[in-house]
Image 1 (tube, rainbow, N blue to C red):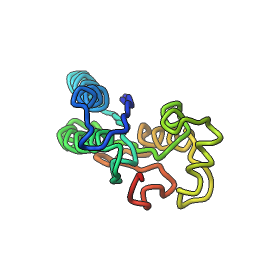
Image 2: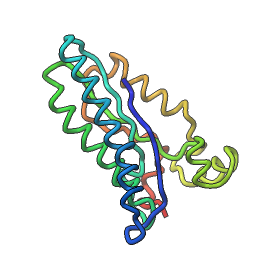
Image 3: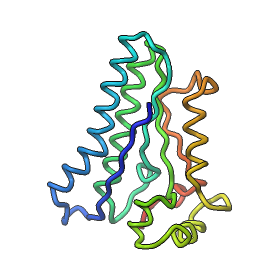
Amino acid sequence: MEGSRKVMWDKVKEDLDLDSYNKLFAINVRGVAACLKHATRAMVEGGVKGSIICTASTTANLVGSTLTDYIMAKCEVVVLMKCVSYQLGKHGIRLNCVSPGPVATPMVCQLNNTGVEEVEKLYESSYCLKGVLKAKHVTDVVLFLASEDSEFVTGQNLLVDGGYAFQGTVD
């Protein structure tokens, strides 16, 4: 099972609209929690061992003067994953998280008010590794976590960001 849904608002603390905040958390955190609740119940009751993979964001490791609510939500997903992974270990269920850096998805393009090529050029110099982060890089990590090659990996948040998080802020 892979559960993710991303909604983002660009608000600073003093401008935070609590209705928007609640909606963001309902989608980004409660949505993941609901997926975990139902997937883990079905797997435990059915005696199914395997892997559950959540998606957060590299921003969970960053700070910034904007995106406060989004960063908080992604941090919550990572902490939820860690707590639940500890509880599921005795059932042979692995739970991990993948945190991509900026990929030229529709959400990131919309946030930057630009197209795929422009987004890739914008972020290319932000990666420690040369090149551009593509969805395939993230997919490869998800496939690894879903496979038996990761049979002894649980409770981990794998950043797939080419070193983007080394910069420390989202400003």
